[in-house]
Length: 485
Image (tube, rainbow, N blue to C red):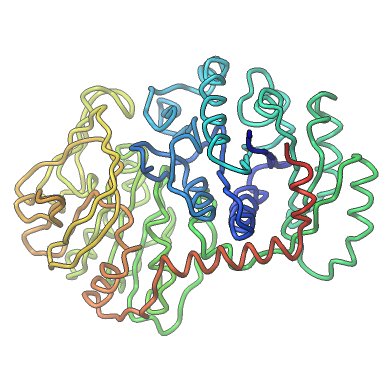
């Protein structure tokens, strides 16, 4: 028997589609159903390594976790990873297939639909219900030709749609009713229900609003979903999360400063640190200075290392980092941040832009050569102090030099990363380092703080359980099952 499917599209970006699908995935899984998440096309620099050796968007990784199933490349068959100058890297069924500018990609899409449908049918063969997430806005009719992300997919796969609107940003009645107005009638006919998300206050005050939307659209109301405060404790996919305001923690013993650069990637590496009461995680943006009293400067991943290194210098962060190091402070570079800490980054094949090389920050005696080979692998090993860890690698390029003789870690018997001669600058390609409670505890102790004893992975699952209960209470889940086909 073929699994049923239901698609969740939005009136715009960041209306909560990913979170709703994650919550529903956990809720239906707790009901005993076999659930698979699916997003035909995603655009994100925050990705996860899959069990079948590829990469997918971080949102689909969270949704798979909510469904309690291994990650698969088929959950996100087309992933676009924005880069500087050369447009976006195009990842199809987990593997990089090249780069394309926005206009070029529009011409590629029609050729990608068969592979999108192939992945979708494979997931349907494994599930009772496939929860499909759209991308951006359903009303982007200027992009409707060859669309594979929203109505183009819904029509091709014959999957009914539930439309999500965000009341927190205002104008939700107009955004939902207006979507029906601008859509082609056959596209609009695919929408069967709607959800109003992120409501704050007394829900009875919007009861008339829900009825008005129903009357204007003819769509079934699935529910008025209150704002879920704990969403911030789940790994985010969108860089909007890191660009939000930093909440300072009074009494925290450890200050970690993170320069926020334009092409930041895999920024969920920050989440476990933020969850620690003893860590004041300070996001430093251009125009601000890295605090002189911070204990650690953390340079995280980048999808465009050379471009972000230039942005780092333009913001004056290089001067702040050098001063921090002279004062005896520690610096840790993860992936792209590791490459920036070296003496030179070379791009002979023009992967990130025009071929050439640039000087790095020079805090590690290493050099990086970028190449088309991409390493995607889950790993485990021991760091330089003997502390075990598990994580993953997702990078291009090879880094070599004298400081590699002092490796950051040993992975499968092989040295990895580098440490400076003064043992205050560290570089590694390992992502997910701080999600490992052992590593996070060791770093907090090294920096003069203490771990709260947080089981980070268990805490994420507990939030997903509470999100599922939130969905059960406020949405008509039985109604959703009746709409699915």
